[in-house]
Length: 202
Image (cartoon, rainbow, N blue to C red; front, side, top):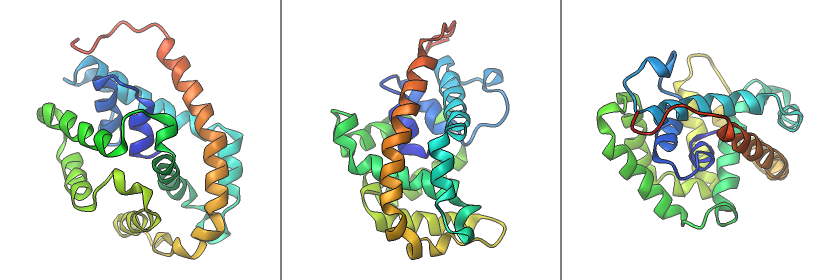
Protein backbone atom coordinates (compact mmCIF):
# COMPACT_ATOMS: atom_id res chain seq x y z
CA UNK A 1 0.00 0.00 0.00
CA UNK A 2 1.10 3.56 -0.65
CA UNK A 3 0.69 6.71 1.47
CA UNK A 4 -2.95 7.53 0.78
CA UNK A 5 -4.18 4.02 1.52
CA UNK A 6 -2.09 3.76 4.69
CA UNK A 7 -3.45 7.09 5.91
CA UNK A 8 -7.07 6.14 5.30
CA UNK A 9 -6.61 2.76 6.96
CA UNK A 10 -5.17 4.49 10.04
CA UNK A 11 -8.61 5.96 10.72
CA UNK A 12 -9.21 9.21 12.60
CA UNK A 13 -6.50 8.85 15.24
CA UNK A 14 -3.74 11.43 14.77
CA UNK A 15 -1.12 9.16 16.27
CA UNK A 16 -1.92 6.27 13.96
CA UNK A 17 -1.94 8.65 10.99
CA UNK A 18 1.46 10.01 11.96
CA UNK A 19 2.75 6.46 12.20
CA UNK A 20 1.23 5.68 8.81
CA UNK A 21 3.37 8.44 7.31
CA UNK A 22 6.48 7.47 9.24
CA UNK A 23 6.23 3.77 8.43
CA UNK A 24 8.52 3.90 5.40
CA UNK A 25 11.07 6.14 7.11
CA UNK A 26 11.60 4.68 10.60
CA UNK A 27 13.87 1.63 10.81
CA UNK A 28 14.12 -0.89 13.60
CA UNK A 29 11.81 -1.24 16.58
CA UNK A 30 9.71 1.94 16.89
CA UNK A 31 9.05 1.13 20.56
CA UNK A 32 12.66 2.16 21.21
CA UNK A 33 12.09 5.62 19.72
CA UNK A 34 10.97 8.86 21.35
CA UNK A 35 7.83 8.99 19.20
CA UNK A 36 4.40 9.35 20.79
CA UNK A 37 3.00 5.96 21.73
CA UNK A 38 0.19 5.89 19.18
CA UNK A 39 2.60 6.95 16.44
CA UNK A 40 4.70 3.92 17.34
CA UNK A 41 1.56 1.81 17.07
CA UNK A 42 0.87 3.44 13.70
CA UNK A 43 4.26 2.34 12.41
CA UNK A 44 3.55 -1.21 13.55
CA UNK A 45 0.15 -1.04 11.83
CA UNK A 46 1.84 0.21 8.64
CA UNK A 47 4.19 -2.77 8.72
CA UNK A 48 1.35 -5.17 9.49
CA UNK A 49 -0.60 -3.92 6.46
CA UNK A 50 2.39 -4.35 4.15
CA UNK A 51 3.00 -7.86 5.47
CA UNK A 52 -0.66 -8.86 5.37
CA UNK A 53 -1.30 -7.73 1.82
CA UNK A 54 1.54 -9.90 0.55
CA UNK A 55 -0.32 -12.93 1.95
CA UNK A 56 -3.53 -12.30 0.01
CA UNK A 57 -4.15 -14.58 -3.00
CA UNK A 58 -5.94 -11.76 -4.87
CA UNK A 59 -2.82 -9.59 -4.52
CA UNK A 60 -0.62 -12.40 -5.81
CA UNK A 61 -2.94 -13.04 -8.75
CA UNK A 62 -2.86 -9.35 -9.69
CA UNK A 63 0.94 -9.36 -9.70
CA UNK A 64 0.89 -12.39 -11.97
CA UNK A 65 -1.15 -10.45 -14.56
CA UNK A 66 1.82 -8.23 -15.38
CA UNK A 67 3.93 -8.77 -18.48
CA UNK A 68 7.23 -10.41 -17.57
CA UNK A 69 9.23 -7.21 -18.11
CA UNK A 70 7.30 -5.42 -15.36
CA UNK A 71 6.57 -8.28 -12.97
CA UNK A 72 9.60 -7.72 -10.72
CA UNK A 73 8.35 -4.17 -10.05
CA UNK A 74 4.64 -4.99 -10.00
CA UNK A 75 4.33 -4.38 -6.24
CA UNK A 76 5.51 -0.77 -6.64
CA UNK A 77 3.18 -0.21 -9.57
CA UNK A 78 0.16 -1.70 -7.78
CA UNK A 79 0.82 0.42 -4.67
CA UNK A 80 0.50 3.60 -6.74
CA UNK A 81 -2.33 2.22 -8.86
CA UNK A 82 -4.32 1.42 -5.71
CA UNK A 83 -3.82 4.97 -4.41
CA UNK A 84 -5.15 6.12 -7.79
CA UNK A 85 -8.21 3.88 -7.41
CA UNK A 86 -8.72 5.06 -3.85
CA UNK A 87 -8.52 8.71 -4.88
CA UNK A 88 -11.05 8.14 -7.66
CA UNK A 89 -13.45 6.38 -5.23
CA UNK A 90 -12.67 8.54 -2.21
CA UNK A 91 -16.29 9.41 -1.43
CA UNK A 92 -17.02 5.70 -0.92
CA UNK A 93 -14.57 5.59 1.98
CA UNK A 94 -14.55 9.01 3.63
CA UNK A 95 -16.99 11.81 4.35
CA UNK A 96 -14.06 14.26 4.39
CA UNK A 97 -13.26 15.67 0.93
CA UNK A 98 -9.89 14.51 -0.37
CA UNK A 99 -8.55 18.06 -0.62
CA UNK A 100 -9.44 18.65 3.05
CA UNK A 101 -7.91 15.32 4.05
CA UNK A 102 -4.76 16.32 2.16
CA UNK A 103 -4.65 19.62 4.09
CA UNK A 104 -5.26 17.89 7.45
CA UNK A 105 -2.28 15.56 6.91
CA UNK A 106 0.01 18.51 6.28
CA UNK A 107 -1.25 20.16 9.45
CA UNK A 108 -0.64 16.94 11.37
CA UNK A 109 2.97 16.75 10.21
CA UNK A 110 3.48 20.43 11.04
CA UNK A 111 2.26 19.85 14.61
CA UNK A 112 4.79 17.04 15.02
CA UNK A 113 7.63 18.51 12.99
CA UNK A 114 10.21 17.71 15.67
CA UNK A 115 9.82 13.96 15.07
CA UNK A 116 9.45 14.03 11.27
CA UNK A 117 12.68 12.84 9.58
CA UNK A 118 14.32 14.87 6.82
CA UNK A 119 13.52 12.21 4.25
CA UNK A 120 9.80 12.60 4.89
CA UNK A 121 10.06 16.40 4.74
CA UNK A 122 11.73 16.04 1.32
CA UNK A 123 8.86 13.88 0.17
CA UNK A 124 6.33 16.40 1.46
CA UNK A 125 8.05 19.24 -0.41
CA UNK A 126 7.69 17.13 -3.53
CA UNK A 127 4.06 16.43 -2.58
CA UNK A 128 3.40 20.16 -2.26
CA UNK A 129 4.91 20.80 -5.69
CA UNK A 130 2.80 18.07 -7.31
CA UNK A 131 -0.43 18.64 -5.36
CA UNK A 132 -0.33 15.22 -3.72
CA UNK A 133 -2.33 13.44 -2.39
CA UNK A 134 -5.36 14.95 -4.10
CA UNK A 135 -3.70 14.70 -7.51
CA UNK A 136 -3.55 10.92 -7.26
CA UNK A 137 -6.89 11.10 -9.09
CA UNK A 138 -4.81 11.75 -12.22
CA UNK A 139 -3.31 8.74 -14.01
CA UNK A 140 -0.67 11.06 -15.43
CA UNK A 141 0.44 11.94 -11.89
CA UNK A 142 0.73 8.27 -10.99
CA UNK A 143 2.87 7.62 -14.07
CA UNK A 144 5.03 10.64 -13.25
CA UNK A 145 5.50 9.37 -9.70
CA UNK A 146 6.45 5.90 -10.94
CA UNK A 147 9.00 7.37 -13.29
CA UNK A 148 10.50 9.33 -10.42
CA UNK A 149 10.71 6.22 -8.25
CA UNK A 150 12.43 4.41 -11.09
CA UNK A 151 15.04 7.15 -11.35
CA UNK A 152 15.84 6.79 -7.65
CA UNK A 153 16.33 3.03 -7.76
CA UNK A 154 19.92 1.88 -8.08
CA UNK A 155 19.37 -0.76 -10.77
CA UNK A 156 17.89 -0.35 -14.25
CA UNK A 157 14.11 -0.79 -14.21
CA UNK A 158 11.06 -0.30 -16.46
CA UNK A 159 9.10 2.09 -14.24
CA UNK A 160 9.51 4.91 -16.77
CA UNK A 161 7.62 2.72 -19.27
CA UNK A 162 4.51 1.88 -17.22
CA UNK A 163 2.44 4.03 -19.60
CA UNK A 164 2.95 1.24 -22.16
CA UNK A 165 0.85 -1.17 -20.09
CA UNK A 166 -1.33 1.23 -18.07
CA UNK A 167 -4.47 1.07 -20.24
CA UNK A 168 -4.19 -2.70 -20.55
CA UNK A 169 -3.76 -3.14 -16.80
CA UNK A 170 -6.20 -0.46 -15.62
CA UNK A 171 -9.23 -2.82 -15.47
CA UNK A 172 -7.11 -5.29 -13.50
CA UNK A 173 -6.10 -2.55 -11.05
CA UNK A 174 -9.73 -1.57 -10.55
CA UNK A 175 -10.84 -5.17 -10.07
CA UNK A 176 -7.90 -5.96 -7.81
CA UNK A 177 -8.55 -2.93 -5.64
CA UNK A 178 -12.20 -3.93 -5.23
CA UNK A 179 -11.10 -7.37 -4.05
CA UNK A 180 -8.06 -6.53 -1.96
CA UNK A 181 -8.92 -3.29 -0.18
CA UNK A 182 -11.95 -4.63 1.75
CA UNK A 183 -9.85 -7.56 2.93
CA UNK A 184 -7.17 -5.20 4.20
CA UNK A 185 -9.79 -3.01 5.89
CA UNK A 186 -11.18 -6.05 7.72
CA UNK A 187 -7.69 -7.13 8.79
CA UNK A 188 -6.93 -3.63 10.10
CA UNK A 189 -10.21 -3.52 12.01
CA UNK A 190 -9.29 -6.80 13.70
CA UNK A 191 -5.76 -5.59 14.45
CA UNK A 192 -7.07 -2.42 16.07
CA UNK A 193 -9.39 -4.44 18.33
CA UNK A 194 -6.49 -6.38 19.82
CA UNK A 195 -5.65 -5.25 23.38
CA UNK A 196 -3.25 -2.30 23.45
CA UNK A 197 -1.51 -0.91 26.50
CA UNK A 198 -0.24 2.32 24.93
CA UNK A 199 -2.01 5.63 24.41
CA UNK A 200 -1.38 8.69 22.21
CA UNK A 201 0.37 10.65 24.91
CA UNK A 202 2.36 7.73 26.33
